[in-house]
Length: 77
Image 1 (cartoon, rainbow, N blue to C red):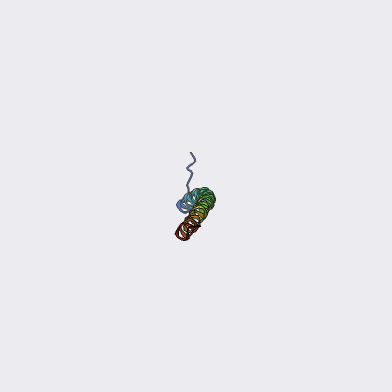
Image 2 (cartoon, rainbow, N blue to C red):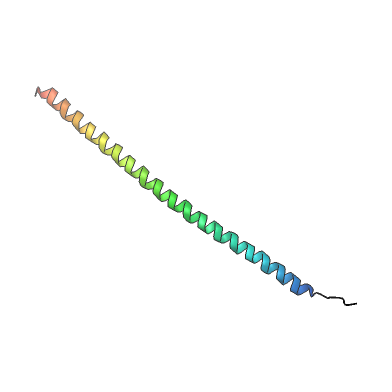
């Protein structure tokens, strides 16, 4: 009859190693997800900046045109 004795310290170290491997794997997945979120945020910021710039440019152009039309009307031109 052979009785196999397992060293409890080695068993605990094995459990710690497995948990550490799982944690590292989860961190890698989270890093990849954060990189994707960062890329998505940059794309959204670029799009919003372009839209805001276009609206601002259009609004400014409209105000300038309105101002010129008012000045012409005031002077009867």
